[in-house]
Image (cartoon, rainbow, N blue to C red; front, side):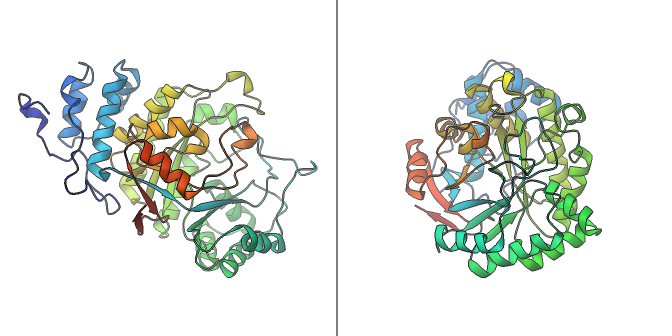
Amino acid sequence: MNSAAPHLAPGLRPFERGPTNPGPEAGFPVRDELLDSLAPDLAPLRDKVLAGTRLSFEDGQTLFATSDVHGLAALANYVNESLNGNRATFTFNRHLNYTNKCQYRCMFCAFRRDGDEADTVVMDMDYVREHLTANFSDGMKEVHVVGGINPDLPFDYYTELLRTIKETRPHLHVKGFTMIELNHLAEISGKPVEWVVEALREAGLDSCPGGGAEVLSPRVHRKLYNGKLPPEEWIATVKKVHRAGLHTNATMLFGHIETTDERLDHMVAIRGVQEETGGFLQFIPLVFHPENTPLQRLGKTTGLDSLRTLAVSRLMLDNVPHIKAYWIMLGLRIAQLGLLHGADDIDGTVVEEHITHDAGATTPQGLSTEELAGLIRETGRQPVLRDTLYTELQAV
């Protein structure tokens, strides 16, 4: 960094490091050489970041509007490297979509079925047990469990599903059930969310994913998924889950009818929840896939928009430890570039994914740990295999 710019305070950490942000490795130089030459609109934001000052909504508008995309990437990359050094993490996981029958008709979804289609899925426990035995390995760290809001399934189905997973694969971390699913389980059980979470924990639930938030915008909610959990109730539910002692992720589905201001509203809302609960581990911008949905006419957003959104997420969400470049939805090339635009994680092996591929994703169904590690190395990062909660980190 140019020594003629004393206000940049070399070596100052822009954000507080959390327990899962180890900071730079010994001898790793955090890349700050581009921060002296940012465009005039980004220079004041650079100074705020380096001083540890939280960026405002208006600052976020500047980040989305700037034409200095290289400067935006450099600033987000500096923050990421200050938090995580040269490490980029992934996990050895697999998805389990237990049903695709769903009572909602969200306009962005190609996964749901009414129940009378030939490809409707409702997994019984014998199938789950056989699937876990035949297709999961002892080395896997996580199973990601989500499904549609199926009105036919009783509450006991969900506890039995968790017990079956734990009995068959006791070592697996079960990351399951979005806030939408948990709210549905509270309704069908006649119990509060806190009771539902405790019952699921006793059955084997270890953490929750971040899906179902979509965009926390009342306008978008009314237009695209009006029957689903409203934004304020999603926020209320995730706070209850955090207070019950479970970590979750947070997602944002972008690239459809939402505005960049609505993306920022979403980020500020997530930041506010994190300030109150500290329960989010990751923020995951999910790019919308329009094929086979009523919104197919919109087309897919650009790679540049995806990278900008990753960078803005890293800069705005100063209290969320990790930003994920989810390769399934971004594509492999954009996910790789995301690791240089503020992201420090690319998810995992996945192996079998239906929600995004039903909407036209052309990414592979899954990758091996070796393939993921290779993709990370191509970016110059050090691949690190993690567990769900970032308590086990293994350089590979």
